[in-house]
Image 1 (tube, protein in one colour):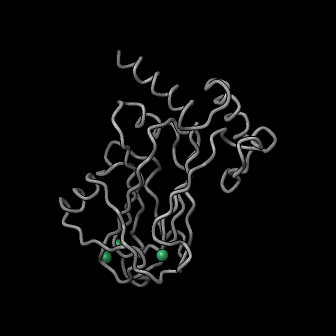
Image 2: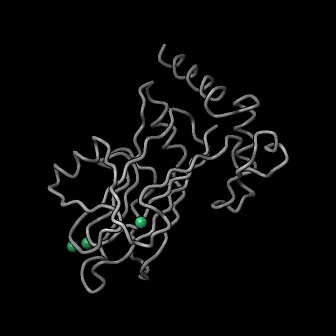
Amino acid sequence: MKTRLVNYRVLLCAALICGSIASPLLDITQAQTTRQASSGVGDAPVAAQEDVARIPFDCRGRPLVYVAGNAADNFAGPEASTLSPALNSYFVSNNLTRRVFDDGGKDRAFGQSFQLNCCKICKAVLEIRVRNEDPNGLASNDGLAVGVAPFTTVRFAPGYAIWNPPGSPRTITLPLNVSALNDYIMKSANCPWWLDVYVQDDTAVDYVKLTVSYY
Ligand SMILES: [Ca+2]
Ligand SMILES: [Ca+2]
Ligand SMILES: [Ca+2]
């Protein structure tokens, strides 16, 4: 019963939310074939529905871009960040002092959460711009985590060492694990699905941008 419910959700999602114009199975085949030949990041299409068939694409669904923290201000904020209930609990239980976007200084952790659509994903890329706030100290051990707080069982990318190699500020582009994302999204019918981003304590964050292509 649960499997049937999930399958039904996928089909409904593909038809109503994700803009698929062929069968989901066909979309999967085409997306995988195209992705192998693609350069990966940065080539997601932005096209009118009628142009989709004529433009190279990684996924048939048009990408949705979620941006938090104002990508155009070069650390000039601050802007507020949003924490999911789980990420907020993670901050509380680990007694972490929190920073928001464009917030300089050391010894404060950063978090941002996004709500994903309840829809199967064919590609997702996270982009984050960071600045080293303790170059002669312990920024060097700072990591970036993407998953679901507390990041013990659900992760969408391996733990990422932000300052290896050094060089600040920098923009990190991180392709996310689509299989792990879909395992998470398909596991029950409950929405919304939160994706949590966590940055350790001696690194400032200008913005976080998440680009997701849904089937
Ligand atoms: Ca520190
Ligand atoms: Ca540190
Ligand atoms: Ca900013």
